[in-house]
Every structure is written in structure tokens, then in C-alpha cells.
Image (cartoon, rainbow, N blue to C red):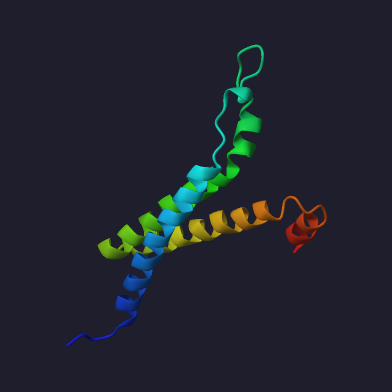
Length: 114
């Protein structure tokens, strides 16, 4: 008979979130912006502009990698790596939420000051 333990519940939640992370990766892939307009007339790439345009893609990719790292660490039994990966995921997701508030002029300073 199946015995419900805290470890089993955490493993099931890890698997559910790992499959949800494919949605994050897809949304990041759809929002990436790699165009020839990022190259200046002298042939150099504006890295700051390129990073800002693709920030959502990088944050979603970071979340995807951190979630899958946490899932594999859970199944391998390395709880330190798992907790560190979940912490990194929460930072990536929080930065992604702040990126959504960017168009609103006065929300950003209020959230940063909290």
C-alpha cells in the first residue's frame, strides 16, 4: 500500500513544477528578440540593449534551469543543492514579476523600496 510521506509529496510537487517550467521556457522563447537591428552601423553589438530586450527570455531560461536542477537534486538526495536552486528560482521569478511592472511609472520605486 502507498504510504504518504512529506518526501513523497515534495517529489510530486517537484515533478509538477518541472513540467510547468516547460511553459516558462516556451514563453521566454516566444518573447526573445534577436534581430539585426541590434547591430550598430559600425558593426558592433549593443550588449546592454540586447540584454534588456531579452531579459524576459534570460529570466525564464534561468528559472527553467533552476527548477530542473532542484528536481534532479531532489531525486539524487542532495538537499543543499535543491534548496539553493529553489532560492535561485524564486529570485528569477521575482525579477520576472518586477519586469511586468516596468511600464507603470510609479510602481517600480514603490516595489524596490519595500
